[in-house]
Length: 285
Image (cartoon, rainbow, N blue to C red; front, side, top):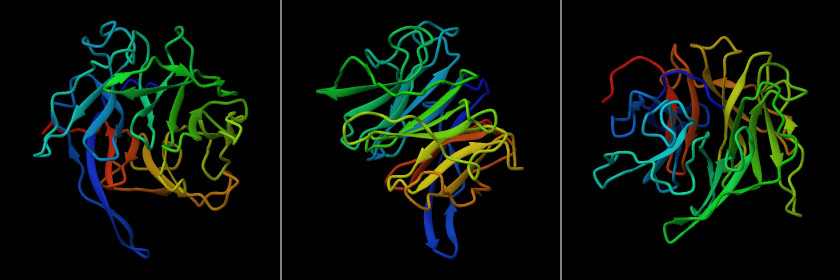
């Protein structure tokens, strides 16, 4: 899914104060020019060990195919001092002139799930690649039924387990512009049809950029339909049973995560590092 806004990556950290007080977030820190550029950076995903940040860059002359082509996958590595190295897009086989993005990283840290644009232009879905000896395999498409968006907009997040795919799209039974769905892979290896998460999560507005925590119990997403602080805010909801349609009322993460701008693409790793994208004002550090 592409939204043509000037979005920057930021980083924060969370820690639990107590069950009663919930989660507190430190003030986000905008990543330096080694990561951010004058183009658009979206879809940040951090490796489990926190050393490699993957993201997509749009409208950039150094992308495969140039500025007017699709988005490329870029990555930056953290040094021992915590500083991020200059980002690169030299991911052989993973970038082409269409829309490329990493939508999930497997538990083994060698399996990567990709936005599928490898067979032909306009083909949407999910592919998988594996890395052995620093060499990526050719992306292979997954057979996931029901990926039919009325608007042509999609957002994906594959859980590290590799059997839960979160989707944002305008399906035939959507409540509004884009709803959040889940696809589950059965024990037979086959993917089921998407399940709409229901009216507690979805509204008449758009619900986008879903992210599911490691325990598969907490969903983070962004929406413009709940009278938030800006054009899109990040919310969190708890899964209450195994049906995927019974959720707690979504809670706005408020400041400092949300702003008067567009805040989305929330993700976190096991260490509690939080990465998200925002077009809030401010100069790069």
